[in-house]
Amino acid sequence: MNIITTQNLSKAYHHKDGVVDAIKNISLSVEKGSFVTITGPSGSGKTTLLLTLAGLIRPTSGSFSFLEKELTHVADSELAHFRRKNVGFIMQSFALIPYLTCIQNVMMPLSLNKVDNAKQKSIAKEVLANVGLENRMNHLPRELSAGQQQRVAIARALINSPSVIFADEPTGNLDPSLSIEILNFLKSINKEKNITIVMVTHSPIAAEYGNVKIHLNNGQISSMINLN
Amino acid sequence: MNLLKLVWIELWNKKSQLISSLMAIVIGIGVIVGIRTINVYSEKAVAIKLDNLGANILVLPQAASIDDYYTSDIDAPTIPMEYVERILTSDIKGVDNMSPKLTRRITLDNKKYVLTGIQPKDEIASKPLWQTTGFGKELEASCAPSSDENTSHGYEDEKLKRKAVDTLDYSECLLGFQVAKALNLKEKEILKIQDKEFIVAKLLDETGTVDDDRIFVNLRAAQDIFGIPDQISAIEIMGCCNAISDGLLGRLRNILPDTRITTINQIVSTQIETNKMMNKTSVIFLIIILFVGSISIGNYMWANVNERRKEIGILRMIGTLKSEIYKILLLKAIILGLIGGILGYLLGTISAYYMGPVFAQIQVSAIPIFILWAVLISIGISILGSLLPAYFAAKIEPFSNMQEE
Image 1 (tube, one colour):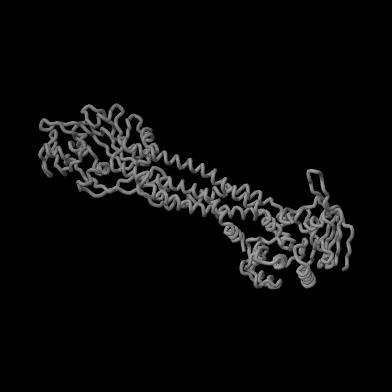
Image 2 (cartoon, helix red, strand yellow):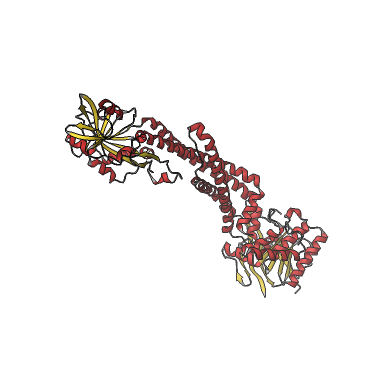
């Protein structure tokens, strides 16, 4: 079953020097439960593709759908609802709110879904325990190491039991051993929870974790290997 | 977690910014509350002064002068008694008491006195100097609210308790201090005026006013003595000072066009003018505060939104709606307004408490209803200043946090 499908997806940015095509005519299908890695040189359009698939930016042309629901032209509010229910995000810079504690950061997606406070707390505690941060729940992000911060971000991404996690260079700020730890963790949730993972990476080691490997060049797919 | 908690944590996280943004609004609201508090108590002081002066408005025949009224000229023109009814049945507010009277000079034992016909009950409320005389029951003469606005100040005027003349029968009279002395009359003795006999019901205490030389009889008796039924020389009115400054005289002139209506309390006019000026000043301050406060809060919000673009981007990324971002900013504005309003009220009230005696020679205390106004105005200013930053915050793209990587 395809979870993400795109048809001739393009995104162009308007600059004072002219129009820059970040991605051009990308058509792909991602099966549910896949671990997709997107690689390519800087400026090849990896992040733009990720953001477009996640419903964070709108394509200039083409279409994309999620679980066969066309999302290209839906309202902003519908896209926001789509994200809060189906998507988790893991970013290179962790994207944590600095003045919220770990548990408060993790609870945020649940609060948007109007889950009551007690339930928010119990689920957040459980998820934080799963990522090994049960003793750091009330710490602020700045009080944690980079690896711990990324684990908080993973906990936040997991808390809504999303269908897909979009990860943009999740190991970019981590040392090699921590990177492996995080990648193994992503692999395990991909296998155990059948959560689809779409990960942008520069690292060839990280790219090896994927079972669908997409390589971009100049905004176009130059190669796509499906190991499923 | 919920939006309110998120806002509160964020505000608490940046206390110094919060304090500096609140300064303008607290000082502004404080100034308005301070001026209004002193003003309200100043108005109250004026009202009490006016009450102490007794009647403060005179309704005279068009052709009569105030001199005629005081000299009680025998030929002085009169006005119909019906005018009293006309005021009573009108919707004019601020008339606390009316004393219709007929005054003429009479001669007794070759000496001239002033005979004044009065309506009992109405009379004494406008004559506080008589209150020590001690007859009749107590009545309350007060500065009645001239408009609904006056009741919203959150205070009630102090009531001046005075003695009223319960009854003054057709055959009874009251003697001023000098008259009683000159005629050598005591209570219960008989005074004969043009074939009519009057029992001296009471001797009035010395007042030091023209009343000391007057003989008071029932108005109807006076009209019969002078042969002018249903006519009176004047209507003395005790008007509320607020109502006078609100244009009571003009309204009286509208319903009694062929009369001469004048105030007799020049000494309080200055204070009434001062109150008016303070009212205007507080309005000017309100306008200034609306601008300065809104700009200050707007500036804070603008800086806050710019500083937190990344956080707003994160919130948008995980699915926060634009409307919820807008709500977060407005919630913040409401909290700022609430805190600013309460602190402004406290500042203004404390300032008024200490400055009232110095600048207006009046004792001032807190007016609780002002806290509601202070908070409402403060929240209004805060929301006004936050609308534009909130609009732009809601437009921040959800991926903005990723672009600086």
